[in-house]
Length: 262
Image (tube, rainbow, N blue to C red; front, top):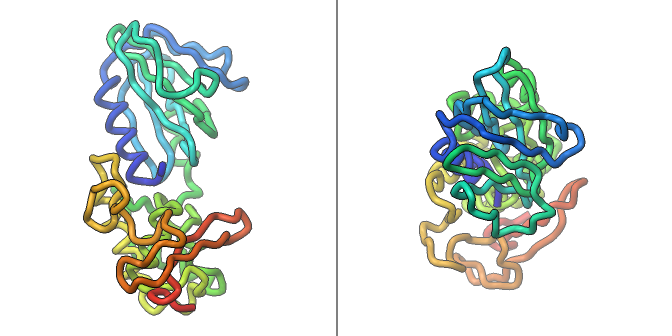
């Protein structure tokens, strides 16, 4: 799932593949950027901010940043120069960036925008503290969560304005590990600090690898406690895991009704 750790891994991979290289061509397959040509620009590197990717370029009158969001289905992949992009349908390609040795291809990217690098902070000012960033501040995350005590904790954790980087997988897993029902209100959570601290530890533990494990086991099918396991026995108590849509956007939530009582 493209959550904070996965986005950080994408940023690291793009930096390794492109940083310091000059673009020999660019192809944007979205209407707003269709006429943009970044040829001649140098890739300065890529950074993650929550679930947002910031690919930076120098070499023009103004340093530029290509902002993209992976949402549920987006990804960036790199190929050798001359290699035909593969692994995803060609019609889902939104961006191609070429250098002499490497080609970076963005599939199913969302919220694409080319902005002055100096405007990055303003562009993402709505985000809360980044669980994997230098701005991580548990006190600020707690303050933002506590500002809406009547909201369910499941919805509040997914709100990137509270803290940036948690997606549906980590929401479900951290609530299971803390024994909290996703439908408990924020005001009824006794220890928000323990909750956000655990969330930060879980995301950080998976940076540098593509397998998102919360159980400590990387074997396929054993990585998580409740996420994606409806109808299967809880690894802790044996009760069948349940699933239900939650919130206005109807995000699927997984939980153990015994370990996480309402």
